[in-house]
Length: 179
Image (cartoon, rainbow, N blue to C red; front, top):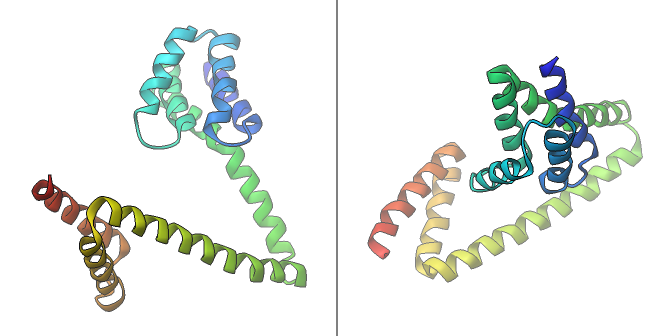
């Protein structure tokens, strides 16, 4: 019975929490504190504070921790799955609809419109990252990182994950000398 309660405690906020983790936090608190009484408000706020100090989505961190505390490892997995299940279900439904209508001109036109928008969003993000890098690290360092990344990705054909690891290592090493 506890596993079903854990599932419901995180599935319902996942469905109703439009806008991601921050919008579902009060809903999770209502289930965990109000409905099931697994924690006090003070305990929940402490778990929330600890979760916010870690990287990643807050709703999944809360779910995994609270599910683990209430139901062990299986409870943690159930809570985590219940948190992401609404998104998975919605994506599968939308993908089924999209695949059903993929040959219609309206759907093809959507792709023609979305691609340039994504390109612009990526360009703006890249510009912002480069600008922040220039401000914090300097122009020469930023240009060297861009050129080095380009060479590793396009000329050497190194996997992007390895380029990221190399960039992190270079940043860590140079950070020791800069500061």
